[in-house]
Image 1 (cartoon, rainbow, N blue to C red):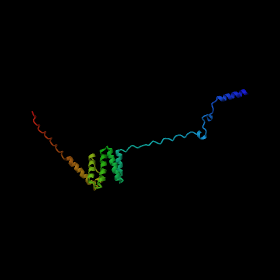
Image 2: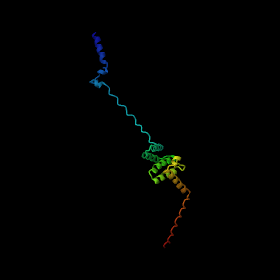
Image 3: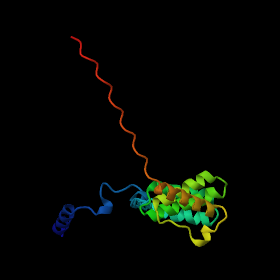
Image 4: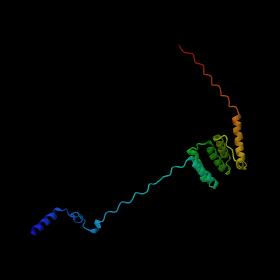
Length: 172
């Protein structure tokens, strides 16, 4: 029996100690709990693409219709600066800018905006309800007449080039 006891002790010495009883076991129970997982990364911030010129124009028209002329002017100018591709869109932008300056009594600015609308799109025309407006109806008709006169007028003849001065005789 003593021999069996010695054999059992020898086999027990060969086994590795359980993980809980290892030499590197933590001293307290609070150290035995695993560290909390790091928080998940914040969601990616999705930045919407900047609005297109056409979207800026639509926003400006909506602001105009809502009576916010300051915002409408800002949005429509931004649309023009972004570069409206279609001539009809450029003409429409200038039309709304003209409407806003016409009602403030700035006739020169009103005429300029309507002229730019017509230059952007020669087929530009006001809707019947717009054409009958007492302020800008007459202005746009006047601008159209001025542009028609300018187009019908023949281009001025170029001035002849000045004759070169005679050369001085060579000295001997």
